[in-house]
Image (cartoon, rainbow over all chains, first blue to last red):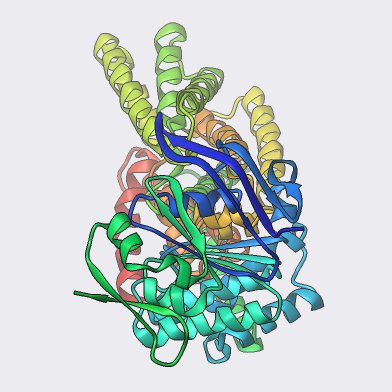
Length: 256
Length: 311
């Protein structure tokens, strides 16, 4: 059984087509990157998988079940979504933000129970935020804030983690820290899907890449199969140099 | 939360209770007239009305600011207050006096009109509610102005209604209405308070809330209907007391933090204390009683600037 199956998926917004006949599968335990130019439909597809956008045509199965038949709250225990760049209007503490991830497990007025506190502590430990628990979310750096948002998703204890450009706007240290964290989680059994603009980072960390262009799947395969000079020329319309990483058998892209 | 934080929280709660008690005493024991049984009875009614009106308005404001993730939203943004003013103005012209039933119906009708118009398109209902509410408020205000110009005699009464005024005449009938809607409002508020976690989560983003399992569309409609009811109750009795629903939730958030489990309670009591103090001043500043709503803004702005600047 696959973690995610997308079957004949169409989506339009204000009568304009966004996605056309998308089909692909993501196996359990895979680390998948969705790449493609701006407007290709990457974020849209991620939001459909996250059961945030619902007025699509076609079918999305998660762990073998059509997601239309899963209640939102039950879905939140299986799939967690990390939005791109979260702004916080009200200044919650980092701990408050992360413990929101336990919402799908709580009933009203019930305080966090032992399980919940364990899950939150585990998420904090995974993301290395031990020293930030009582800090306010708007007073920490954007790298730490992104970690806190990922920690909230982890506190949901999901099987599948969907992330929308988790490393954009971050320095290289935080980019690598986040991708390393995702890889460690992946090795512990999480299925991970990341939308990412950075081809080199995607190539370095993902097992499989899905390249979208103009609302269609252009190519699916390993980084070596997808990141090619001709393909990039065709999809992005720019000339590049694709060279094998000196230490690993993966392609890296250079500007000419 | 550590013990020290709880103690800090407790200190603030004690401070709040003291302010509230001060407000009650001030309202009870100032002003013209002797402390006869009859006058005291009226003042006790006025105090209860102030506690109720201030508390409910601030509580509703806190809820809406959480739901819309927008600190500029207040109960009147959604159109129900101007709807009440319109209903009451029509009532004054038709009957010659302000009838709570007219305000209540006006408020509800505009509230539901806003909801219906906002629901016509698909997509994010939550954001469209604000815009529709603001637009409908303007429409109602224009109609009220039209009525005011048409019926010159009633001008004075309508102004008190627009600004909000606690000194209503308590006929036995109105006492009963007041009792009834106090009880109803209490239940609605307790019901809404149960969703404090939802308000926390929604205030951090709609997508996050959805992915955490909240059905944002249904939830928004439910909260909108219930707060419209609450606000309709208030404005039908005392008119549109301004400023409380906007600024008190802010102040409460600054004092008690962003979590709704704390700041909604803070909003209620801070709102009560604030309206009582404002009304006591409205009664004593000049020889005749001013509309309470004038004073809430006059003393509210400096209070807000103080909190904003020094906290």
